[in-house]
Image 1: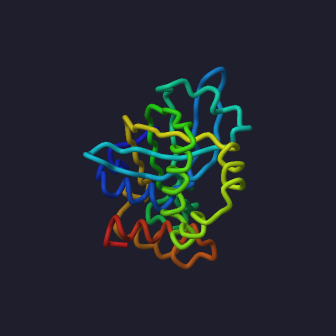
Image 2: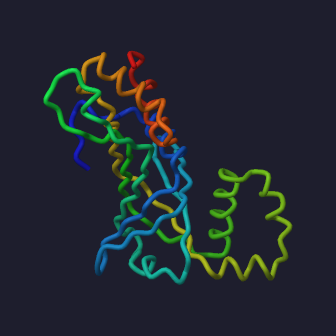
Image 3: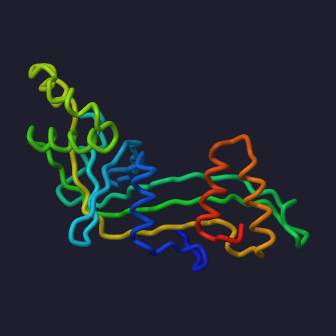
Length: 205
C-alpha cells in the first residue's frame, strides 16, 4: 500500500483496535491467479505477535491455494468519504477522498481438524455475538457436525502491518475543521465516521 509519511499510522494499539472494529476484511491470495474472499476475521495478539483467525466455505476454491505457509493479504477497510475542493481555503484545488485502511500480510496455515474448526468458530462467536455462545454449545451434534464439514478454518501469522489514515493531514487547521464539520453533518454514516476519525486524530477539527 502506498503510504506517504504524513498518512502513516504506526501505533500498534490503534492498528489493532481499527482491525477489530472493521473486522469484515478482504482476504487476498495469489496462487494460480488472484483471488479474494470477503469474510470476518478474529484479531488476536500474543507476545507481540498478531494472528488472524477465520474460516471460509469448503466450496470456495480459494482455500485450495493455501499450501502450508502461503502468503496472503488481509485488507481492513474503514470509513471513507468524498472531500469537496470547495472546503479548501487555497484555490484552485481538486477533489479527494479521505479514508483509513490497514493491510495485514502474513503466512496462512490451515487448521482443518474438527477441533480446530470448532475452536475458531467459538472464537468468532465470542467476539461477534457473545450471548449466542451458550446456545451454540447446545446445538444438536449431528447438525453441528454437518455445518463444520462445510467450512475450512485457518490461522494467519501476520508478518507485516501497514496502516494509512488519509485524513487531510496535509491541509491547514482551518481547512481540517471545515472538512470535519462538513462530513460530521453529512447524511451518509460513513462520512460522519470519517469526521470522527479526523477529530480523534487531530483535536483541531
